[in-house]
Length: 381
Image (cartoon, rainbow, N blue to C red; front, side, top):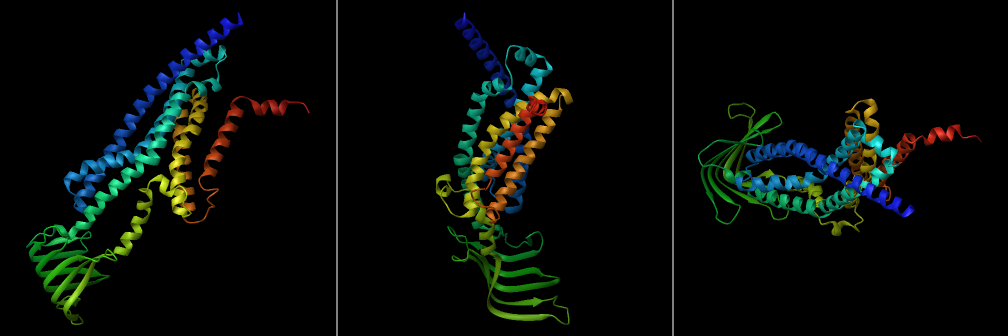
């Protein structure tokens, strides 16, 4: 009799587990598509706008969008799973399905066990993305952007046309332009450059010019030959005139460019290369890569508790609270990552304290939902 009862319970749990997993997967796909369309559509607009402003070739547009999509998938997938769990559990209580399950002895612990195959699969998939696919996509993205920067916006100078660069802060004109095949340099003749130094305009005229990149500093220069520089307009009485044979005009500061790209280079490094690093920025990066899949495990439990709570306060309350929890959780991880990068946190504390804090909140919430506190208060001493 006991054996038959165990088999009956096992069969019942198997049916319930398949039903819950199917519901979670269906809603996960639906939520992912909705959020993905919004975010990926926005990414497409931003990349197209960036390509127009920075002169990125059209052939590189789709790869850039694709690499940005890979970068955003872990976050979208994590949020989608979290909301799907809340919606499935909330719907089961709204339709009284969960009440029937509870009467059969199926509670929150069983829900957690039933959906674990889906959660574990998403955990492994996001772990693969954050540790392998995302760094690779960022590396490929950087390669395309570096290729575009190497050609520089001055590679697109058109002969005999006034062109604005740096959002109108610099106007350039060359009567003749010749690009050297296979190199990033350009030879120009009859040059006019208008730039602003504070409130004072600087006008530079030169007979010849050549664009080149310093191999050591990576700064981009225009080497102007046989010309004059006017500080102030030529008609001003207090204007300054400087005649020169050769003058190097810096267009792009390689040091600043290198500084701004430092973080991007760390983010594109393979996980194994930074796993045992002592550099705080690299430690923060690998902790961040592991934090995203870890949050999936914690949020899956939180989602069941929020789903169970939602019917009493309105069917959308659990979703609203869930979104707020997700935003606060991820922002806390980002703040911790930034603090670790700047040496304000010890690596042993790093991003782990955020996970421990959220896990503690989940445990307290679970105890509250199951009346552990009320039993503790009413228990006689």
